[in-house]
Image (cartoon, rainbow, N blue to C red; front, side, top):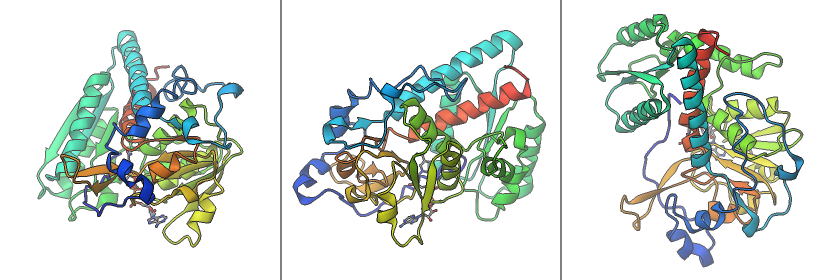
Length: 368
Ligand code: NAD
């Protein structure tokens, strides 16, 4: 979450649709695409909002509502509504915060350190602050100029490490190039590492029988979506495309912890299409617009598209639109369920940050 690497670079429009559907693709606008309108109504029977996985317990799956890889047609595709799930998660967090405040008088606190004047980073920090306020989390914000020294940042981290009102610390990435990112992230004490990027956390995620204190927000959000839509993971073949430290790698580790058989496709994989086509579950986190085509997808597969890629779009007032790593128009003809971009994984990332902050406050205060 700290890095929030949504690079807003402009890319040449990559229209993944075959020529006959190109006109429809041109009308595909964020959140209002024709496919989303058509399929959103079919979400309800599978989506189970009463499964408070993140916050409290693990649900019992009902076999009748489990999504498994099976032949799917366009009409039966489920759009996994990340906005709706994220809202439910935030409501649950809010209720828990109220309970904690009423019982022991503690309000969770999240400190965010922003260095420099990158507009995208400022936007992420603003969004996090807003989400904290809505959920009832107190946010502490430090904005430092681009030419600040490493020592200044480390001093703030040290102060927040010692501050009992702060339960989570997040350093917004990227940091200016004169700073040692690794050194700064290591300075955050592991008990407040709500991003889950500390090597100890990742190491514990990778080891059997160990429990990490925090799970990185975006991969945690991906798994939460699968759980809330009753997607069976155990025993399934999963392919994660991308192996970054903040998304792909921890997502693969999480799927493995859930007893999936996991393959990782990366930039040096020679036959990505063939490997991906074997998957019951695909998590795509590459940062390449529409890379995963319909032909890569096994009929009935469930797709979590993490990618957020701006592509030129003259029909959009902003001059661009956001697309995922998966060609949505082709995927909905083959998959059984898919996250849209935007409105899929994105809203879950901030919800999971709030969830980790609450978790931290509960743990530090021994509140059950
Ligand atoms: P990254 O650049 O750090 O990692 C990309 C990964 O993709 C690398 O591991 C690389 O090996 C792999 N890759 C590159 N080219 C490939 C290819 N041709 N085939 C297979 N794999 C290839 O990116 P990241 O930080 O992991 O982010 C990935 C995408 O997810 C980006 O679009 C980013 O904006 C998005 N993202 C979204 C959220 C969210 O909240 N929704 C959060 C984080 C990242």
